[in-house]
Length: 388
Ligand SMILES: Cc1cc2nc3c(=O)[nH]c(=O)nc-3n(C[C@H](O)[C@H](O)[C@H](O)COP(=O)(O)OP(=O)(O)OC[C@H]3O[C@@H](n4cnc5c(N)ncnc54)[C@H](O)[C@@H]3O)c2cc1C
Image 1: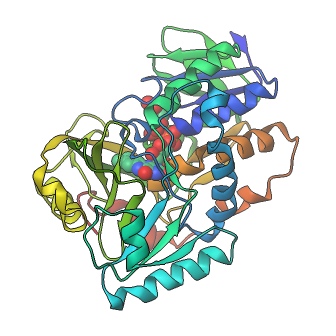
Image 2: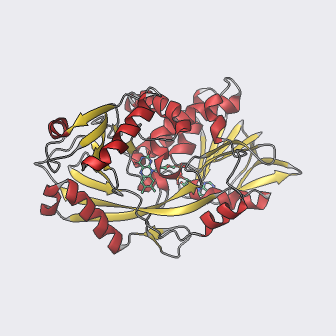
Image 3: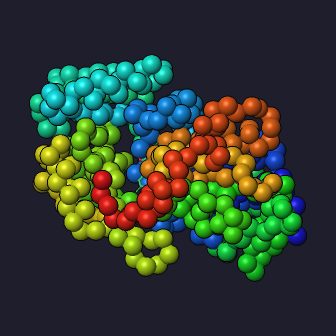
């Protein structure tokens, strides 16, 4: 049996940043993950890596601001090439009737100190000349950008090793209770880990893990698919682009390929929570992107994949002590957890060690008022193939 201060279950970006912050504070930490950092089909493996501060939930805005500061130096701090770039995020109105949506987003964000600008069609063409001409308006956050989530999760794992954190990857890990308390984790074929606090940061796998403890939260597994084009060595698209009324995110990654996301659901493969891309959704993603980026029609699809995220009923994560003593939850980050992950790790580490009061986490309490059993049941039973 090995004794620790904190055990973190899950080595995605959320578990990774929590463990890294705890270890930097001198806590004795162990991390366990049956797959390892950023393994298929986890969300951190599949993620588009967009660092978007605009258009977020009210509760998220102070966290997103802190995360933006942290991303600025993350490659240096982790000593790794994380493919971070800050080309901004551009949310487009293609037509005049969509401009009020842009104005509402700018008003809401700027009232909470997000650095966001309104662009006209000419300014959009200056920032992103390869987009289709004639855009009506845009909301631009110049400090936003992108990073490579898989590289971030792997760099975190490496940094944990350097800090002496015990890592148990590749074996099943299960929660252990004694009386009313969660006392740690048993690793199949490995050691018994014990600690006063065990963090469940297992993304889409978290709900099943806590079910035997009699805990149920309104969260479901959802497969989201991504598409990558072949390389465009001539074009340059600096910002990540989204648009009012389009289910799409579009960016050019370090290799020169275009990466297409949005809320397009994959098809379950029958292997656990894994999904695979649906051809019809790939075609719709491609068509939507080509409408904004005409040169895409001269390119081909190089690759498509789908990964599984934990989607909560209100889009906000569940964070905090909940249920039996000794248990701490950190999951349900829906489709926007990557950007805030460094700040979430910092805040949760502070919350667990008690060094700081963390009011920024209060809105994410697992005990927050919910929408009622009927809405929860509808949410959890909806098909994950729905495209809305
Ligand atoms: C396709 C896609 C695109 C996205 N794009 C963006 C984006 O552009 N910007 C953004 O901000 N966010 C984005 N997101 C969301 C973001 O990627 C997620 O919110 C974030 O990666 C969640 O990280 P996580 O560590 O909570 O979960 P995960 O990365 O899913 O990690 C959970 C880990 O738990 C492990 N696990 C499972 N069972 C156990 C167990 N019993 N014990 C221990 N470990 C276990 C798994 O193996 C896995 O490694 C996207 C998500 C998807 C799916």
